[in-house]
Length: 120
Image (cartoon, rainbow, N blue to C red; front, side, top):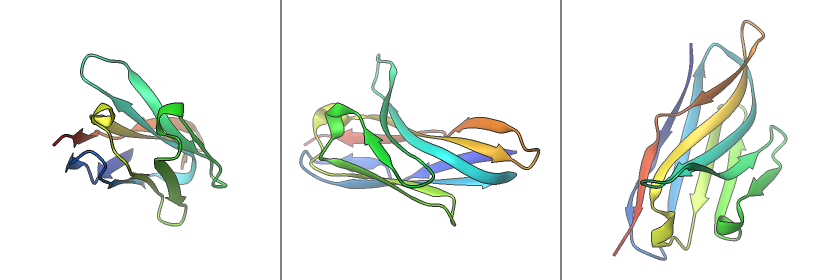
């Protein structure tokens, strides 16, 4: 069994910062690409940022210059540093990863989500 567990969400004022963390665990040999998605109420789940195993990031246009994704391969963790937060960043944030399991199969796994609310 493999899983992702997020932490770090909460309530923050506009212009503030938050750091999300996500840890992979279970029968994992290798964590490949990792990503953050978000879903606002009544909207589809959208990609926020991705990072390759080698550390190459990419971002949605809406968060460029404000968010930074990073990872620690030894700890099987991915992070999302969010700055200059806006009310429109309010959403449930989900961690996502493609992993190689001990059965040598590829699996795409999701975290349970963490709420981020940007409001004064």
